[in-house]
Image (cartoon, rainbow, N blue to C red; front, side, top):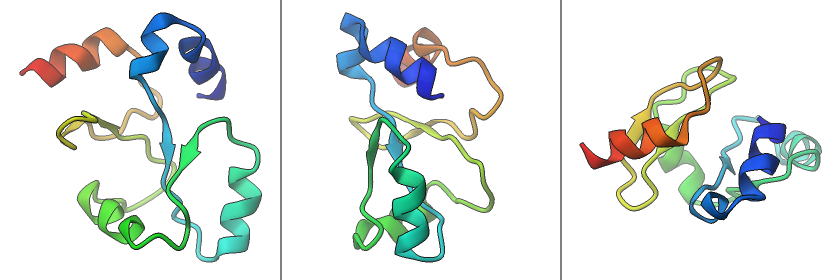
Length: 96
């Protein structure tokens, strides 16, 4: 994912794409240790929105990679782990 993210962010299309880490860690120290190795944004561990977002995307296990429409919050891909990282497919899903 990190390699894909870096390569996409280096393109003009990359301005329209963002990965945001939503931690399911049980404490802030574990969150900080893991997030320190990531190139993308994160919802702060102590943010009020973190639990609400976890409920919205129905986090029940990890790893989990949800693709959301940033304009609406609609889930486009419920769990993209192990699936092709296809921006054009996600754009088409967003238009539906």
